[in-house]
Length: 131
Image (cartoon, rainbow, N blue to C red; front, top):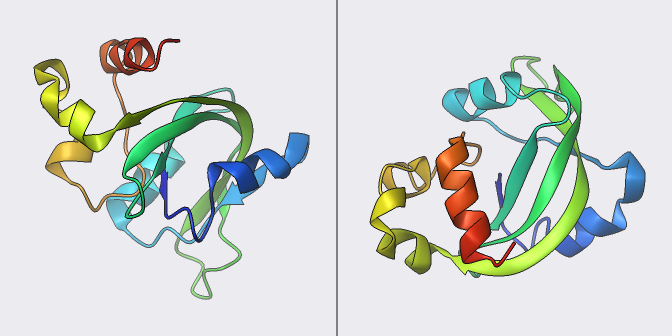
């Protein structure tokens, strides 16, 4: 899940506390489909886009897809996510250098704000972050 840190940062996500915060404002159909596929308990990397371009934390889905209150037309959804932890950041450059991660949407579709990640890649990135 990608967010510009000057709009919504990992620190703001942490301050949202146990109730978490809605991941809303997504207006790309493919990203919205990815939100719809998320299940309660799913873990997600929190990526700071534009400023930093790095994975900085992990959040957990605590409420599955619901209508996005910021969408006046009622076509898009949001999910509720809760802060889990900050991690040693993994930069986009580091991810690009790892050939095992070259298939990721983060590289192939860099403007996509919500994207799936396979288990093997999740483990690789965790290892890169010393988790």
